[in-house]
Length: 306
Image (cartoon, rainbow, N blue to C red; front, side):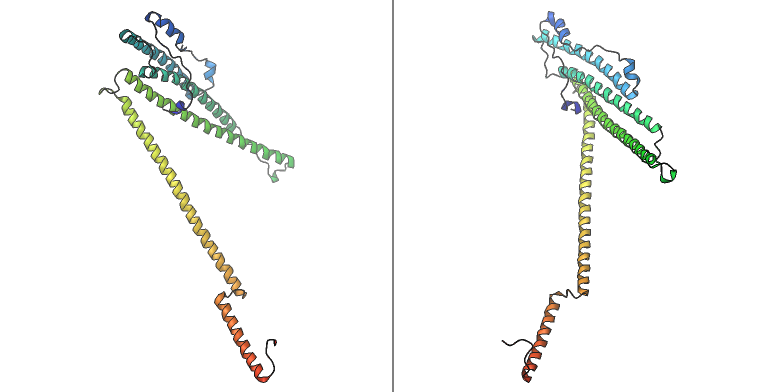
């Protein structure tokens, strides 16, 4: 199911119907305390309509859970009369519908808590933004060094506080969205279980759960496809950018090598292997010719005698 199923569900009693004459007494002992409690006005007074709406949703869940408990308990009592066993079957849609409804009570409490924190942070941010931001005293203000330094610190502290509150709001909003998704997913599951309880899940006259489930799965599939496309696009963009960057770096390196080579050529440091070989051959040729002419005149050679 949703987000809540990754967490430990609140422990709920596992009622069992034993002897018919003792059923009501045992059920009363093991049934969860689901009395509807009107929230204190002070607890909701500082919150916005979002937190108040989830507070009201919690009360509606309490009523639904009480109603489901009575319905499920009557069902298993009838099972005992017709089949001889009134034990609550924990694999049945009856039990699970009631069980999931108890989790929704806690889910609504979490949403009330997070919504209240979101509202409180929103109020803090609005109050902060309603006050003028500290003015930074510039050099031409005539203020002393200490005053200018203090004004800069005050402005930085103000900006930091605004950034922190906005960051907290983003976190709270994401948290509420996750909780709401989990809550709504569970509502879809409860609708399915109630349809199973009433024998209407496969009926032609009723199948809102199947219609809703199919539509929801299409949305999930669309989200998954979109997420994959986004990841693919970003990966392709990154790789394309890396390739482009590599080509740019290669071109720059090649240009640098060419520039260095040309500059070294200008100073006569490099002439290439062919140029150096030709120069050596020309020198040897001139030396040989000189040696021969000197030998013919008896004046020795350019190299020392051995």
